[in-house]
Amino acid sequence: MSEIGKLDRTKAALRLLIVIYESKKTLDRDGVFELLNKKYRIGKTAGYSAIKVCKQLGLIEEKFVKTVGVRPSVLHSLTEKGKNVAEIIVELEKALSQVVA
Image (cartoon, rainbow, N blue to C red; front, side, top):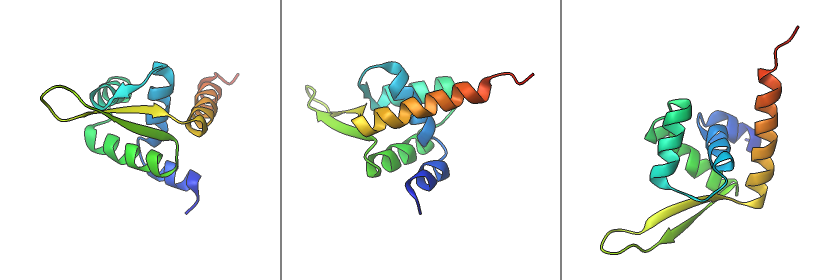
């Protein structure tokens, strides 16, 4: 399957890229899930699937950060490839939302 097919098949992958891109910062996992739910009503299961596919495609990266006493936090950010793809998706979304006369 093509890479675009993998993104298309995964319900939340495109939206995950938009959420991280529009946040303009690195997000922890809870932040990712909160924004996906708030903006698109996407649950954690779909969010986990989207993270997995986007990592496989080299669009996002995860960084584990130690925190005191509890398990490490997982931070998500876009790779350069991910930023490029997210910019295209945002532009596509804008084009699709334009009113046709």
